[in-house]
Image (cartoon, rainbow, N blue to C red; front, side, top):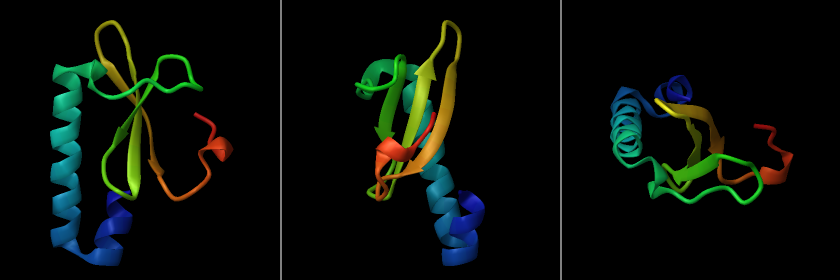
Amino acid sequence: MLEYVVNKFGKDKGKEVYDRIEKVLKEISITPEMYRASGKRKNLRKCFLSKQTSIYYRIDKDHIEVASFRTNRKNPKKFKV
């Protein structure tokens, strides 16, 4: 994802996206249940990173697992997580 952003929009935008991802992942690590649970996938949560992108993650006993970064523009029923 970051490679695409850097290639399409430049290093400054890539750094901005990277910093946003780091901030959100830190927030999730502190309060993992802060984002809503998925109604369709057991133990999966959805965090809106931006208007264009969401992060799907799972809470495990001793860690957080990022399942995927997904675009918000496509039909989510077509995604397999």
